[in-house]
Amino acid sequence: MKMHVLLTTLHAKYSHASLALPCIASCCSNLDDVDVDICELTVNEQHHALLRRIMSYGAEVVAFSCYIWNIEQTLKLAADIKQISADTRIVLGGPEASFGVFELMHEHPAVDFVIKGEGELVFRKLLEQLNVFKQNPERLENVDKSFAAIENLFFRDGVDIATGPLSKKPLELDQIPSPFTAGLVDLSRPLTYYETSRGCPFSCAFCLSSVEGAVRSFSMARIESDLGWLMRHNTSQIKFVDRTFNFDSRRANHIWLFILENNQSSRFHFEIAADLLTDDNLTLLSRVPAGVFHFEIGIQSASQETLEQVNRKSNLAAICANVKRLREETAVEIHLDLVAGLPGEEYAGLLSSLQVVAELRPHMIQIEPLKVLKGAPMREIANKLGYRYSGNTPYTILATPWLGYADICRVETVGRLLDLFYNHGGFHHSLRFMQQRMTFSALFDRLAHSAHTLDLSGRATRRLYELFAELCGQLLSEEARSLLYDTLFFDYCSCEMPLQGRLPAFIDDRKQQCRWPKRQELAQSHDLPDDSRIRLFRFEFMQDYRGIVPDGGQSAIDFVYISGEGRGLQVLILPAPSE
Ligand code: SF4
Image (cartoon, rainbow, N blue to C red; front, side, top):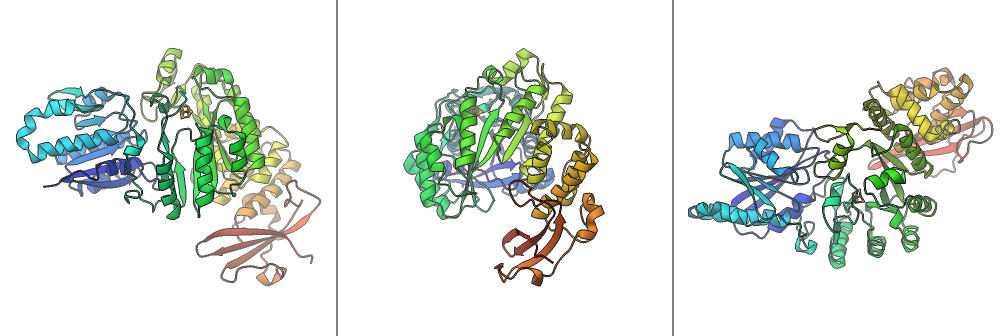
């Protein structure tokens, strides 16, 4: 009789597809008498619904991949599975199960096994062993010796918890059969994770990759085979999970060139170290079409001293110079990250870091309070320096010697406002208008001051623009405020059609000027697709905002909204015909 095994995890969002589970399944695919299923769930589902889904597989072994966002729910599920079926073996793996394993198993008797570190080969050996016992129950008396031979496996030995030999010997990555060609990855989700390497050459104290050991790459032949397969299957978005994709600049160039020569319609997301980019990299990247590459670059802090205290070896001057070149010479989308709460950085220092980052004009800025992760060297530093951080996931800081709790809340609000107003991409002219009056960091600090008690979640577009008007309006004279509202209305019309009776509140006193002309009133020369729905809106603005810098006096502008099946909304912005 075959042994049934279920690999499962709870994603933070539906859009994510697991890479870890397919890699483990592909390593176990040729085991005799073992059937492996994968079931991908999300943390947003009800506990009971999750439990029913898992139990419906009738698996004898249920293995969970554990991260900071799912560990608590995972442990509750493990406890209930054991209540329903005491013989089901529960296995945990993943970063959140790999540290503090003895405590975890003591506190959670439902957990039978924990795998520390890379799971593929350890899990395969565990299944082989469990299957031997299933097929030969008489050999059960050797249970302890058999598990004790498996490296990096924690198991129960009577009332004790025991381990196999603990080893940091890394897996040779080409040993993992391709989970893509084996059809194990769910490509129906919007985002497909893919890795060409594991580990990181750097050792930033706040990051778990710093303890993973040396960086290793799949062979180039294997990378070209998997990546080629993904591109041939028109995978819409491929997110490279390599910790520092360009740790080797020649390797990075080779892969980027391969993508350029073979891509059909995929988009790619990489985490890179900007200071490692070479001239050859930048020359190649200048050939990448707009919208195809997205780079996430960690700046973390603009204070070299602070970075040194967490052992982050990066060259800030080179990062800034290369990000500027990326913005000027390439069409790569840039996302820059900052972390709040690193040693020595006060709130004012954090605002300086934000200003440095904003001046690089990235497409997105993310700022988050530090998480003191289980297993990361930052725990020791934090304990030594007297940090306060939550004992619950995601272990966010609550106070540091340089930041009080109120500062941390303010940083969180700044981060949320950056998402709403900057990363959104639809406040271009209005943000520029505000920045002519104050610095970027001062603006977001002052907005956060006013917004700290507001519920910033789930606002519809019109409400979002109204919030911007309300928060920024408070910072301006009456005269400047009317000009801001004019600018903001241009931004609004550029991404959403204003509706009669549902105009944003800040344009209330000018609603008489709003017009919704018929399509026939549009100049004939515009070639618009026949099968589309076309709608028009016309408004007389105080300035012409169509150029990079607002120009001239009053300007009547037509917005043409084009929509159709399978296409997003397209907006054409044209001078209105003279009356
Ligand atoms: S933060 Fe980035 S560079 Fe530093 S260890 Fe982690 S993955 Fe490597």
